[in-house]
Structures are given as structure tokens and as C-alpha cells.
Length: 253
Ligand code: PGA
Image (cartoon, rainbow, N blue to C red):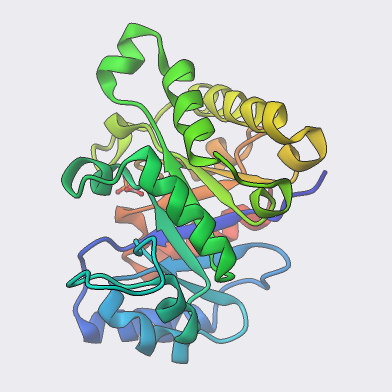
């Protein structure tokens, strides 16, 4: 089963407006066709409108979080219908930084996943273990639990519209990448959980990305692995050349 790879940049809280615009002009004309690789930039909310206007045919724009409800008295929040109305196509959910600093829980990730799909946004659902868990040898159990909770009451049709990102917390922004085998083994374990929930047809179709210090110099060996369908990239997505190198590496997958 051929899964189109995805390279999703996560800019976090970086870039000025001018930087964001010049990035998009440089990258937009150079990304490969979306039939070969889905190239996505998940930007700070305030840039989304400007970026969507300039995204072109083969680049897509995502948000880094959203609220689980359509509307309400939630100062500072942005809803899925608001993102959709501006032409945003993806949203990162449950990133470990949001879990750690903004109380995002498995339960809220589950609600947001359902809300994103309902509003035709593709959720990139992040899961991953801390260093203590990796060292205790319980990674698969912990990640499995996160996946099961994220997909609670999610139908197979809905699940097919989602993307998972496996991001070991100890590898994010640290320069420590999981080895390709470590990443592939955990991603296989995730696929196995999805298989248990939805059957092989669905689990073989869902893209599962790796994230955590993915760089131009390690992307090839990660993407060479059977079950790694692309990458969620922080630091190395900020520079246009570096992002394009990652995207082009994914075309070879
Ligand atoms: P990094 O971030 O590539 O800078 O490690 C990854 C992420 O947080 O998604």
C-alpha cells in the first residue's frame, strides 16, 4: 500500500512576518507536486491568513493547535471552523510542548481530533514518550495508551482522515534523534494499535510521521524505513533550503 509521504514543518513561535512571507515565496515555487509529497507548514496563528493566500498548488498550511469547540467564551482560542474558513488544511494536535505547558490531555486531543475531522482539517496527532519512559522500557505501552485514548469513539472513516506523528520527547529540539530502527519499531507498534482498532486496510493507509531533530543529514536514513511516512520538523523547517531538502528527500520514498 503506497502512502504519500508528508513533510510538515512546525515553526513553533518563531519567525517575523517578513521572514514568514519570504520563506513562503521561496518555497512555494520549489516544492514538488503534492501527489509525490505533501509539503505542509504549520505556522503561528497570526501568519496563517497571509500564508494561505500565497500557498500555491503544492504547499499546504496548518495550525499548531485549535480549540475543541465551535465557539464560546474562551479568550485567546481559535476554533476549527475559523481555521477552515481561512483555508487552513492541517492542524497539529497534542504536541508534547502543548501537553507540557498548556495542559493538553489525551482527552482533549481526542475531542480536537474529532472536531478537526468534522471541519475537514487533517489532524496531525502527536504522541511520544519521555526519556524516563524510554529508559524504563515501557515506550510501546505508553504510546499505545496515547493512541487508544486519542482515537476513542473515532470511526474508521474518521481515522482515515488523520495523520499520526511519533515524537519522542527526548529527541525534540535536543539534537538527539531516535535511531531509524527505534523510530520504525515504535511506529510499527502504533500501526499495530491502529490495526487492532480498525483493521489492516485502515492501519495500512494512515500516515505515521517521525519527529524529533529531523535534519537534512539524517532524513534519508529515517525515511528509508518501512513504516516512517514522513516527518514533523521543528528547527530544520525554519530555513527554506533545509525544508526543501527534506521535502525532496521524501519524494524518493
Ligand atoms: P525539532 O522539533 O525538529 O526541532 O526537534 C520537532 C517538533 O517539535 O515537532
